[in-house]
Length: 257
Length: 257
DNA sequence: CGGAAGATTGAGAGTTCTCAATGCCTGTGG
DNA sequence: CCACAGGCATTGAGAACTCTCAATCTTCCG
Image (cartoon, rainbow over all chains, first blue to last red; front, top):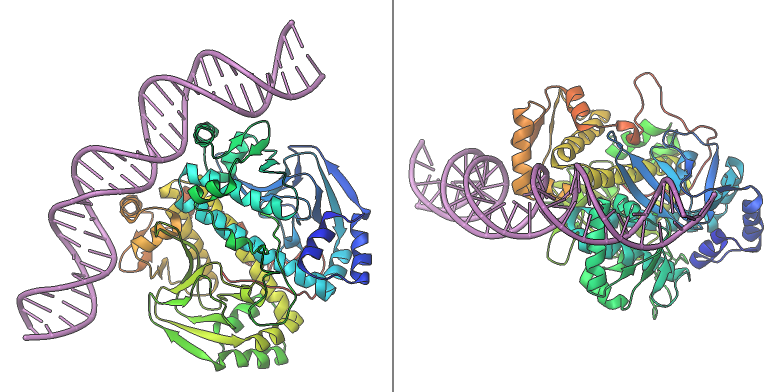
């Protein structure tokens, strides 16, 4: 069975048979984490690379006074910590938001993956997109009020999930409490609640029982001022975006954060 | 003459003679930009990779109502847009903050650089650190008030500049107006001004004439709650931090900052 | 059915923003 | 060398947005 990483890489580049063979190795060591459990802690020096196979997780950092800031959401196909291939230790933690399955890849396997040009290239693409997502997150926190902020995050998740086929007619699962949403957006849970109410009243979106309903995505996008270009998703018409010059076959899809 | 990229890479890894020879090529096509000029615009599809050689620049994004959010400061040795090696177009702009010299590297040269294992590895390290800086930026915007926010940014710049020898006894050049500082921190220039005044009154730091004075960096750090671990700087004793296990040649690299 | 976590709602306090006026500095032209 | 213009820095006052503290209601589960 094709795991999420395979789908993700395939949506970016053309994988060869040997690539696929190697990628099969990835599913060999799988571990499960319960919801709200840490997958990796700040300061850890993991000796495996972790890959999300199922469930949601988030990157987060805890400050002095115990406040938490979430810096990214991880969904199946996202790596938790490519960092540790190069950096000495984790500078943030990763926690499971739902029950989750995580593949543990040995350093050796990771190296083999990276030695495959097509895979390496796809991973690089994904990492650049992730960086764009981080920048968008900064813009969201720095320049938008709570209303636009929430709407924008939902638009982003909508776009990303839609892109990997996890969307059903204007609705999707969002396994987050209002508090977690606040930790991601730099808001208190109380304020998240009030703004959510306002979004609901204006019929822009509804969050109920870990589920998001969006009656009219275009209207939500325009009132949120959402511009998906940073996700570099393949446009409907555009067969696929293409790097300006070089002749690399590399399209879109996002990931992480 | 050794340009900033060489110093930067050398501080990360041991460069061979052929590496150095290749890096000499980097200085062949240099262009200058006046202060406040765009180096690259949002949406551009540059066919060269740009490298900062001298001066400061910033990544930024302009929103609907014209508000600007700065997402990174670029100093000599930082790449402006490794992205375009893979992604189709810029999803943000880059502007010179001071007069700046920028090296233009052809795609071909860029490819040759990436083919060098040591250089690729160093670039990848830098890119991972940059990602950590982006996450720290998010934490700063999401969970700190204006006072800690400004103090933290200054602490970070202090640490980074100190690390590359651009610091002189508790003081350094910061070629930013209060408005630009606000654009980086998600604050209005008026509020930046008031908080700067408070920081000055408490003798934590002074910003005057594009220059930062820090009487006691440890005090500033502790009141700011600054934790430099995300910069992964070489500790004084520790020759260099080192990845837990292996050392492999790797591909990618990413951007700047 | 009882508990506990999460969602709601109200009231009051703080932080940050907006609008505006004024002061300071630097570079230019006379 | 001095006057003036324009950009930036300061300061004041009031408005807006978010937060804190608390109480109450719902929903989920054992």
